[in-house]
Amino acid sequence: MNTSGFNIKGAAILASAIFAVTGHCTDVPPSARLEVIEISGTCLQDNPLQDPMKRRLAAFFPAQYESGQEIPVVYYLNGYGCSSENLIRSSKVWLDLVQRASDAVTPFILVAVDARTRWGCSQYLDSPAQGNYATYICDEILPEFEQSHHLNLKASERLIAGHSSGGFGALRIAMMRKSVFGAVIALSPDSDFPTTHLPPIQASRMKDTTPAEVDQMIATPISSWPEKWASEMMFVGLSAAYAPAGPEHPGKFEWLYDSKGKFQPNVWQRWLENDPLTIVREHEDAFAPEQRIYLDGAALDEWGANIGAHKIYDVLSARHAQCAFYEPPGHHGEHQQDRLQRGLAWVFNKPMVDIK
Image (tube, rainbow, N blue to C red; front, side, top):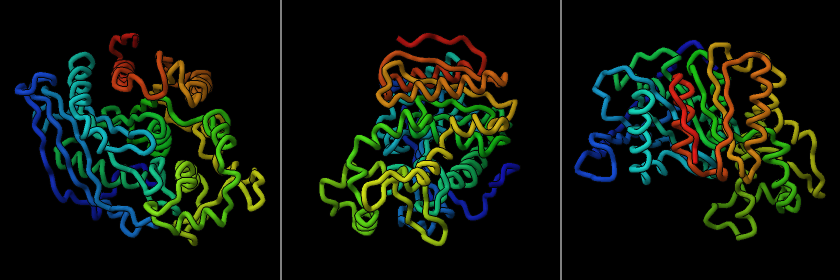
């Protein structure tokens, strides 16, 4: 991937709809607004899953923003199965967060992307089994948004953040584009796969699903799936992200169990090679020295994401990297807005508050 600049060829904003949320609405801050922009991802054209190449971007602007003003931008990646559409539907909550954090920390724009696949989530990676979603975010969304809003940002003014699968994506993209993103905020990121991924894999009916049945799943419209397949959709999506069969087999991937239900360590190794914890352990240059890395994981996280986040912090802090770890109360998906604000405060060296 190109890390020295943006490739904007072919990217275009096709339409823009502005949802003005002002002081007329009593439960959101005055002048806060949401702008919804449709961007056609040329790199998603003819993707192997035939998923839409046109996606909607949600951009939240604080009251302090004036057209052409250069303020930091936070690109936000949602959890598995979610996207910018979820933030649009719950816009009041996110407008409140953006205004509150802009007042308390520093004014910033929050930009949420749509990187879903038919399986639920791309994990924000490029894969011949699903499409080039990391490229879509970095080489099409970023330059189109920033150029259309006359932003000329330094890396230190551009952050990538996310929760769960989005936290994973934020870590991975920050690693791949060190010169583009000055900081990453990863909330309960997928990491330490033996802790977060392997137990549900072993507890599911995944081992009873043969590779031939997986091929049948791929060839069948989801609307026609029998109920027994539904619980496997997340594992199908993760397999497409972590273990694609290769460019010569678009849309195909390797399954973790063979036709006899035997676990395949060679395929699991491909999953582990995508694990942010594996990457930081094996590569001292996983992040650039100037990048700031904020990690968190809820104390009662059902997936154990707090464990992997803390392990990543242990590795990075031993290298004297600019990093922090916080374990907020609650469960995996709780207090996301407060947790994001706390991460922003750390990145911008402002006072942080504990989450109750």
